[in-house]
Length: 226
Image (cartoon, rainbow, N blue to C red):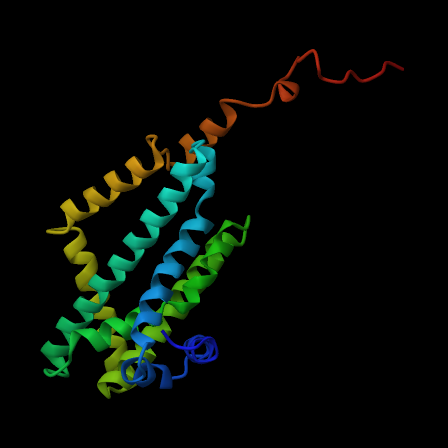
């Protein structure tokens, strides 16, 4: 693993969209392990940001922690498949000699903006922040792929875009069993059947209000008559 100072510098290069990070992560010893750590922590951060669903579903503490880690590893595996999709597109159209390991390291480290995924829990700002982090990491991936494979900006953007489309296509076809396994893993980790639909979540919240908040409750403070 890199020293703390070198690791922070490499992550800063990703966040600032500096193309130097792509060559560094491939050539510097220990940078690949840092990339793996970054993508797992990014997944954990995003899972933490979305953990309000676990709270609403009244998941027990030990199941709560297990759910976070399961979500983090599913996140990491998703970006491993994205790297594989980018490799396929790059080899078909631009760089026949492209290798999987360097692309995987670059794609993983490019998820550094998602380390701020825990901010998604903020009311009103959660969705815009989520979209911003997604675009930020997508730009970092494009910059890294362009530098790594010596492509132009538009060529790299096409590779990443087509790789993403290929991944989505596979998820909706032959990847359906894997998605089903991921849902089963999340449900078993939570220990309950998770409610994720917005209307059902609101109903779940309203199903058990505090007694003092119920209309007509004896504990409700009466307004004095004039």
